Image (tube, rainbow, N blue to C red; front, side, top):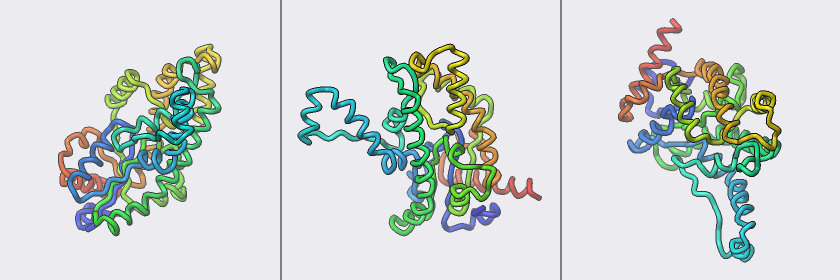
Length: 290
């Protein structure tokens, strides 16, 4: 680990952390707060994926749909208009919309193999963005002069690394760069996330073997054909499974770092509060080990 004790963390002139856990438990909120304090650089994995690694896929998909409209097609063919995504740290809709959902095309669904192709594009982009973390940590100090660095990872980080393998190249690179911090939710948080997702189901990235098994199980359980699956119904059905699938993977990652509760994170009001919370987590880890 980058910081072996609470004291080492407090004494560090440069603090680096990577936040991970289920989407919706405060990773981006805390990252924004740290950035706004003026001493922390905020590196968003999802933003990096959506701009550097999938930006062209996203804009080409938008252009493909626009080309179906004669008025827009003429303007595009003459380079009279420009179409691009307006992705931000707090608005990742262009990325999730491109990922899409499988099922009935009349309900906006994608063919399953096209859906899996986009999932693979995301997997490759996420791995690349995670491996960029060290470069951005150095860049934040050398170029911008930020002494501290927070990596705001996506909820699917545990799907693109092997958390049980300390030699995993992505996990090893991250552990060498920053302190891994798991924001752990409890059963009540999980139930709320499921309710929130049920109100507004959104596309997500899943580990391929898990996703193919979920698709096969759903088709068998529902009796639907691939072309008649309601896309929203499928992703709702898959989401709760995904949370259960990810929880032990997050826990395995946390062995390489520290754990804080989502409830404690909601009480963080300043960079000082956050730094104190991490010191407390490191102290607890020291006690557990001894």
